[in-house]
Image (cartoon, rainbow, N blue to C red; front, side, top):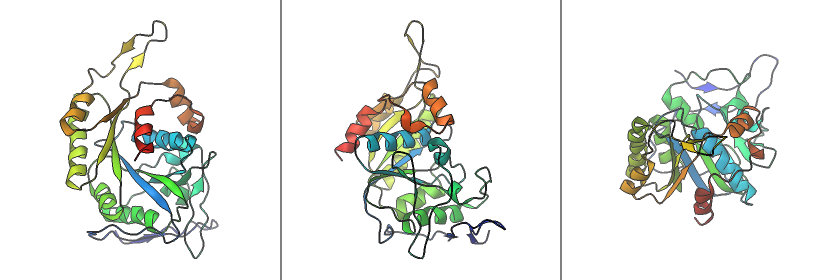
Length: 277
């Protein structure tokens, strides 16, 4: 597949961003010269469908609520859900200097490929190197102003894009998202091992859909069976583990694009860890 430019469609002007093929980088690339970013946190999972984008969004919402200016770089190019989760749409501003992220209701800066597509349901049918190039440009060409935490919503797995992020962006640490099934537990170990090989510290593990609570008696039920997250954390020396239940309220808010109104403190241990990084 040849290099592409997102030049819009007839009758509709879109900010232009040139998608370059990723190179075999051995050192991280500097961000845009006007960007100011203190901490970069990657959020990854060994497989899809475990709620990685949800956790990324909740982390940004929580840190923003605690007074830490937060942003999300949506590196899940072929499955971007961040704009819908925040109920944000439109086209980012761009000029000869660079491109500017779109701001959410509470001031979280967001950049996603969906902001650059004519329709948010249009598929992105690109090969890995082109996708990796787009992620790099979200880092080098977007102006991230005064961000205390930039969260990167990485695509599932340990493939090309994850490697591009680790090689091209100075990631301070990663958070690995999983669910309770034993198979997923095996896969999450692959993600942890990849981080170790790339010398990226694992800040914490999040087990999503860990259990559900009966609305009548309050008893907890492990829908996916016994959790193995604590065993994995102990094996790899990861100190922080968060277990999130099924929450119909949260699911409804995400569907409505209102995640910023969610009030429950479900990631307290992880938020506290980030505050003292």
